[in-house]
Length: 94
Image 1 (cartoon, rainbow, N blue to C red):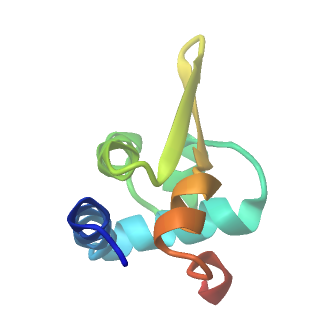
Image 2 (cartoon, rainbow, N blue to C red; image 1 turned 30 degrees about the vertical axis):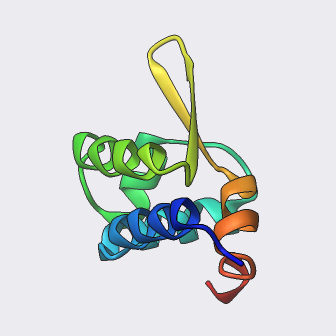
């Protein structure tokens, strides 16, 4: 049986994923099979680096993405563990 904590976590994840930009960002990262910078993602979506950074902050807050800083760049990637636990099979539907 699923716990209340797990259901609360899923609720937060779904709230974050309810924005089309964030959903598209997840798709881009998943299909790239590599880390990407905010600039790279922004170019693909035709949105500013600051907007991408804002959306990734929300994605990271619920554990959907990882961020690694190297110098001035932030490298973003999918947190596969979170998807496997809370949304199994979701990424494959993108």
